[in-house]
Length: 173
Image (cartoon, rainbow, N blue to C red; front, side, top):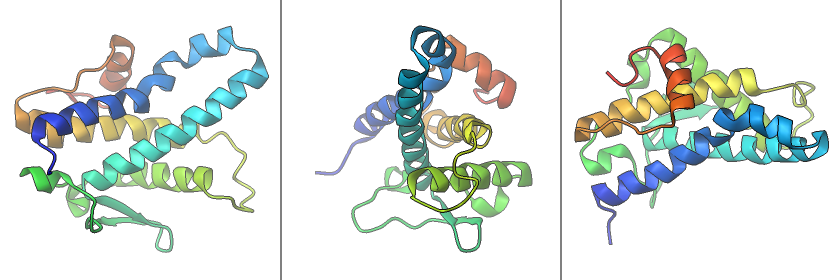
């Protein structure tokens, strides 16, 4: 049976919560956990965030070629669904502002380094500066392409709303 729009929005809500949860709670987590435990939690959260972020981008029609190191318009695989399956527009990769394309390319590149075993010397650096802004942009794109066309706004905790207001001005307009 095909997923309905209300089911889609419920599914997206749970994924958005997982996408943003570590980012809004990271300072409290650092204080409460010893460094080794925090490191394990950080990596678990990082993997979760990049996987969910990539899933949401592909749902919106945004793919990334590691060979060309560039975004492209992603077509769904056989059982995958995209926003277009619900009568919603896909993100047009070619019309994204250059700064947003770069931000998403950095997110995809960092996520690729994180989820693949590699001998890249850059692997162990802090990838948050490339991942976190991408997460904010992904949240804005989901709001713009999925929630607003359905007469809604993405519901996020106040801490993340403050981050979005700073990093993605007008995200909920």
